[in-house]
Image (cartoon, one colour):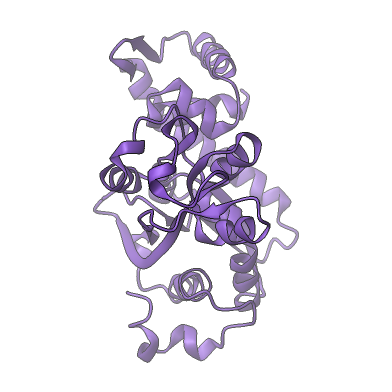
Length: 305
């Protein structure tokens, strides 16, 4: 069985939208439909029903979901184990929110490698719901995400916020932003709610996407306005291509470290949290973080435990 069939099924089970799944996987809706049809034919069962009300799992689809997660986990384990150059090395699997990965993965991973020289890392950009499920099954050891999904076996640590700014190729005034060329952002449920609340006049935009990098690409191609990560906005403004919409509300997205509850006091996970906080939230440089700053209690107030 092709693993992309499982990935497509699991993503659709989460989004309940062929459009959203196609966007998240970077494929067309017809590809999503074809993959689902192939999987249903292989299993001999219908996995989803589609109606005007939306897309829902069938009884057979709900039964298959847990098996699909197990199959994908076993596949990832097998793939990782044969790729690890030193079988004696400790393997740590880390999930990163897609939006954060595109902007910060370099600084982040360099910090991990400096702090854990004998550790092999598997990094997987993903969405919050999927990462929560993978933490529960053991497919991931640690994750950084936008939207925690509460579960008694998961622990979430609020690290702080990352800022988003509205930029435009047309104007620097909110009143002049054209809804017809505005790109609406739904980076997380909380962000989308705040976005609609703070800029209701733009909530009816014809195009909406779930990643800052996608907003940037669309704006560079078509022009218009939209919210992007502040770190991504700065070079675009400096280039002269875009202006910051100075009177648009600044929107912040909370960032959470996530892990299985059993890892809450694990020294390795504590150090990972500290590195993320230092490099992502406080914006510190690429140099090594002293071990004393990663482990000692007196620094715990900087990164909530």
